[in-house]
Image 1 (cartoon, one colour):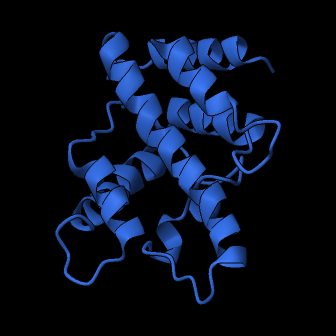
Image 2 (cartoon, rainbow, N blue to C red; image 1 turned 90 degrees about the horizontal axis):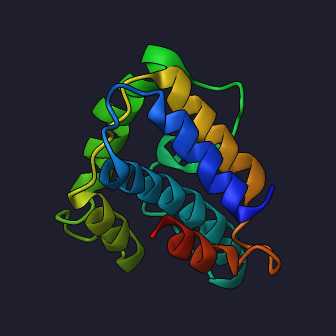
Length: 153
């Protein structure tokens, strides 16, 4: 899938959601989702190249454990998880003592982030689109991040 198609597909799905109102909210929503996917891909790399790398995220909050399965959580279960478990936990990382620099970055990204989507089914569709189309550790896909940013703008 081309970058333009990827972004358009995500935006089209989000337009169906009553909670997402306008481009600013769509961009904000895409940012936190893409960030978690990228962070997950980077952690796979860090586990190989950094001795004794320890993730700042609890296992259940890693993208690969809650989002990567395209038939995983959906509907109200997914919205409840994102709003009441994932976000509160990730927001706390910016203020928790002893958190690694990687954890502080995650915390700062989520400090002002918000999940605007109300439909867990549509959120699952967005997650599956992101999961299936971009591997940020692939040398062929790394340039995509800059392209995504430019395309969104």
